[in-house]
Each structure stands twice: as C-alpha cells, then as structure tokens.
Image (cartoon, rainbow, N blue to C red):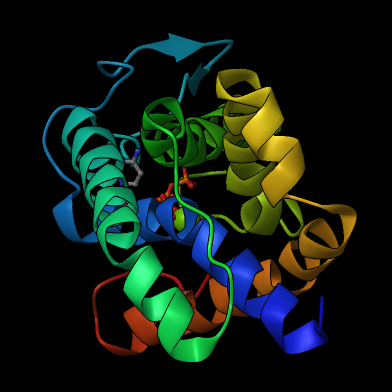
Length: 181
Ligand code: CTP
Ligand code: MG
C-alpha cells in the first residue's frame, strides 16, 4: 500500500473515534457521570465527564461510521483507494471506546491530583485511541486485523496527536473549550 493510501485508510477508519470527543465538547453539560461523588478527597471523574456529553459523543461517532459505510464504495472508487466499512459492532465500539478512554483518563487525572482541565501529556492524546482500538478488536477481531495493519497503526500513532492538538487549539480559539488541550 502506498503511503498516501495508508494515511487515507487510517484517517477513515479512525474518524468514528476522532469525532466523539469533539461532539462531547459541543454537547457537554448537565449531570456529571460521577454524580458529584469523591474518592480519596478528589472527584471520581469530575464535572467534565457528563452523561449527555458521553451519549451524544457516542451517538455522533456512530452516525459518522454509518455515513462513512454508506459512501465508502463511491468515495473509494472515486479516489482509487479500497476503503474499509465498519461492521455493526464496530460502529458502536469505536466511538464508545473513545468516550470510555477519555473517561478512564479523567479517572487517572483525578487520582494523580490533576484538577478538571489540567493537561496530562501523552494520556490526553492517546487515551481514546487505545481504548477504542481495544474495543474494536474485541468487537470484530478478524475485521480489526485486516483493517488496522501495522502500517495503518503506525500512521494512527503519528496523525492522532497532530489532529488532537489541532482540533483542541481550534476549539479553544473558537471559545468552545476552556483549555487548548
Ligand atoms: N465532555 C462531556 N462528557 C464527556 C467528555 C467531555 O460532557 N464524556 C465535555 C465537558 O463539557 C468537558 C468538555 O467536553 O468539559 C471537554 O472535555 P475534556 O477536555 O475531556 O474534559 P475536561 O473538562 O478537560 O476535564 P478532564 O480534566 O476530566 O479531562
Ligand atoms: Mg480537557
């Protein structure tokens, strides 16, 4: 596979995992998942992880996956790249995994004394990728190994932090987010 083709496949396959966190930023608010409870003197998750943000993020990511499935054939032949389609279980696993990874990261942040919104370099950029890929593997192992080849995973490793930093700076500049990370 040519490098450009690998980049396109990686971006396409990861879009349902990239979208949810951004959707959650737009939809966030309302009741926090931890209901305000604390553990060891700090919030379990904090006010930044809400039911609404998580549900909307997962839903928007899944809707994206279905939309990509609908156009994969046409787009693929137009650009001459064989684009993957997402099996039903993966339609949910990628976006839900992205949200869950972000939630687990907040759990770790609170346990390490980081306040809501504090940066946690490395964890902030990769939490959602690790968990969404793990859930996608569990949901459809055969599809996962076929789609996420080592080359595709290597590209994901490179483009994810770039996209993550880029979209968060943009959201911050637009006044949608309190911190640029
Ligand atoms: N958000 C949400 N539910 C989620 C994830 C995000 O409602 N599961 C919304 C919240 O409004 C949150 C914003 O998106 O403030 C930004 O997300 P994020 O940066 O992940 O949260 P932080 O507020 O920075 O909190 P934390 O330190 O726990 O990451
Ligand atoms: Mg944050």
